Length: 250
Ligand code: SLL
Picture 1 (cartoon, rainbow, N blue to C red):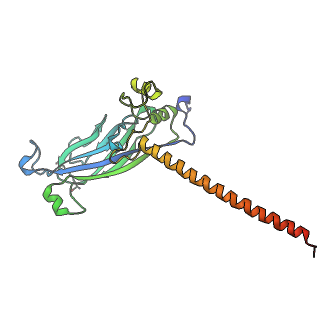
Picture 2: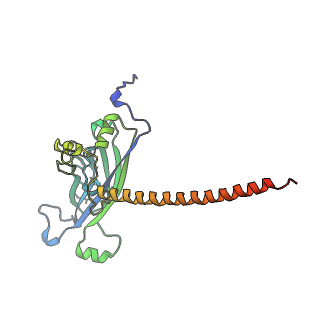
């Protein structure tokens, strides 16, 4: 079969790009006195299965759609979710394995990838009886990282540009970032400050740089001190050598 080659489809050798995301489920026992209308009397829980960004970050710039395959007891058990939020909400009575097939944006030129998630309806750790009594939601989720190995260039550009940013005056007035934002273009910029569960921010980065600068100062000080010691020792050696040269040979 002839192989069609297009420069745009060329893979970037040696490049690997990781994108984190979270997948899993949340289930809530139904309140018998307040059941959603029209559901089967056997159903005990309402649940959602999902694929989302860490901290709910937009992942739709690289993830196009997700196919959720439910247990065959569900009508239309194969559910294609074509846009974010990538999730399916249902009611039911039993736990089962949900298949999630991740389809990437067309520029990716990547095959879909399949994940499995065990839907959890019942508490299985901690104060099980208390959780049941309070009808606590049962969350079961996993952090995952997808590795795009040697991506094609257009996809590399998409991945490194990050999700489209809302126009906000974060970059200085007239700065390149501010201009990009105004135009509603993409930015790979991390948030200015930390938020709960997200320790990656410009502020943290600046603090880390300060810590590194301080550490460099200490290391330079140590090098200077060691050099001083070495110079002293070399002087002593030189003296000994001279003394040795003055002695008659054996
Ligand atoms: C079990 N192996 O026996 C599992 C199967 C299937 C759960 C669980 C269907 C709801 C409906 C439903 O909850 N299926 O009838 O629409 O625990």
